[in-house]
Length: 59
Image (cartoon, rainbow, N blue to C red):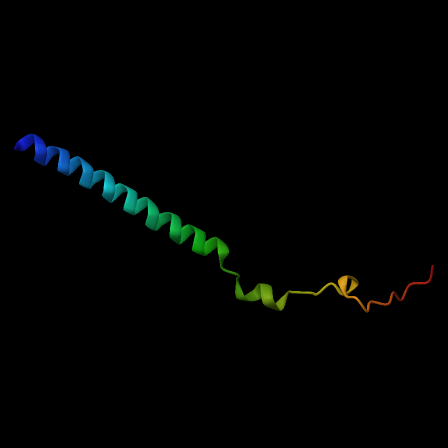
């Protein structure tokens, strides 16, 4: 009976460690995927990719 409880305790410990790693990875990935608010202010569109772009340079 004690051996069964030890096996269950080991399985529970492994499951707990996996859950902790999962939570940490999700928090890190969410932080990396979030866009800081100041990036929106610094965004500059590239008009050269537009279909109706007319170059102002003289060749």
